[in-house]
Image (cartoon, rainbow, N blue to C red; front, top):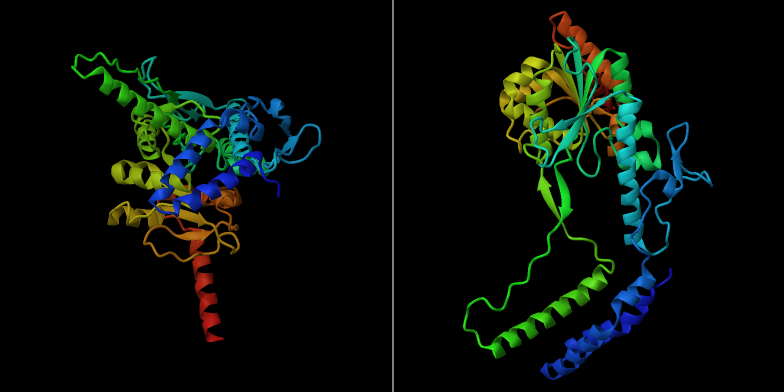
Length: 423
């Protein structure tokens, strides 16, 4: 493993400093001398040799990558998958490169939602002024007018945005497994209206304004000598702070501040807002939710805040490795009972798809997604989710409770356990 130039230079100095600091008070003078020596090193020039500029392309073509006919991200020239460790021993730089590519992927998926899925981008808040921060969701043309069925998709937490399940899957595997596009296309084919939430788009970032220096002539009678001494101490403190900051973050990025979006400052707020202004206003007789990971928690929070409305409009909910917790979220008994009848959680498990998985919580049934990878649970349970919705829709139309296939899985599972105990 190679060692960076800066590490070779600083290692003996760090060791010497540590040894001196272990000494008594008489060593303080040496420590001060060493710190002074370190402060004289031109870190900007030194670190520039270690880390390339954080300047990355803003298009897939600039990265020399493209999606092939199978939806896989491949290098244009070599045909190879994406390589994270583009530069050896520069993890921070590689991570920044990966994040820059991820932002391009997000915009690319947005384009696919509009061009391939024919969804419309709708700004929120609906009454936002021109100057205030805004977010957006995606909807099919008939999302609010479809009289029969509406499907609502909610992704999990993190860097993912509308239309994505997992950025890692999009980059390292394919678009089908990592995006919501297969769900959207099949839903449209089966006559659903579609709304795609964007619960992680909670704020915009703007550059933090620089603090204005306060004038020393503030009307006080502070002696000039005292002001000079304070200024000198302040400069020395700033010099030391900048020294360590330069080493920790050699290419210091702009300081940013967050401006939160009104009534959409968290995934939970976003879910309630979209419910109130879109889903509740839709003409659909039956609403179906697909919620992954933290999206499941956001749905439970929506139920807590809009219980009666949700119960009257939602027919079935498919959760995929949901992180909700009915105890921590203080979901009432009536909510838990409704979830047991109308929800199913496909969880990460090594068991075959749809096999019953025991739960410690008294909420919805849990079945295997057919994979032990959290990020793949939505894609692997894709066919079972649509079957679950079809059964729930048919049961509702015949005024019966959904006879879920999970029940048969639970019976088979219980029988298997009994047989194993006998042996």
